[in-house]
Length: 346
Image 1 (cartoon, helix red, strand yellow):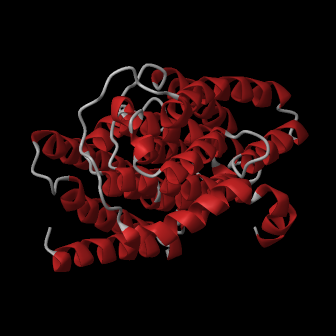
Image 2 (tube, one colour; image 1 turned 180 degrees about the vertical axis):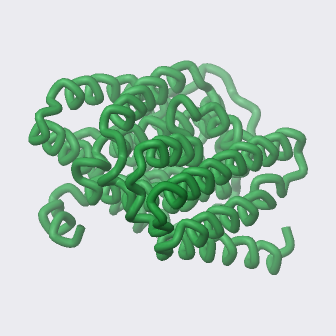
């Protein structure tokens, strides 16, 4: 793609996100979401492959439907209460429609079907944008409207998302689809706590963004898209593969690593809110996603394939991203000891 065009699309993406997260009026929030959608479409379909065009079409249709629902929800609320302010969404029907719209935007179960397909049809760098920065505006809208949302509905969506995110990722061989189901599972953890402690949702989102960015950039460096090529990728940059193992385990939420922090705090908060059964259930369901993280980690470093797999040999690595990956990997693995400082910041 033309660098100037690329710059325009990335700038529009940042502009749309900034407009949504800084707006008070529903129309401005909707405008930001629309700019975001239109800016990411060329980035999804830039390879001109039929699968990329299909992914862009699916993404456009889903996001257009979700934006229409956001507009419908805000208009219903304005009709009954006379308020266009985002924080004043008090009408129950409006908050129900908004929850459905945001679930569709994010890819929460049962509106999750588009997300793995779109991620599979996108390049790894666009997949990173879809999994991280594109989730920020809808999560911000949930954060601002959290006092008036329905707790039972969100808890149900969250538990279903964690269950299906883990379950459907089990038999995948395409790494982008595995990361899509991982994203759905993490969104479940964010959705369950947003009513009780919205700041924890944001902390979870930041940590998830950090770890997912590390995984996507690492995979982009070693040029790996499926498990069979991941098995032979350790010969390219062994040290990077070893750190990818730790990042995947951190994404799974294992204790000495960064990814354990948000899960630990969410379980603690749910127990304080007398939701111990929900906390137990969501913790058990995250074991499903732990299985495919372990499988990815196993393929990354431990497996020696009995046969040679045909893949593109890399004789020179991309030096420009190596410092970024080094910093992100260190943060993805070693932030747990400074968790008191993180909590004072958040």
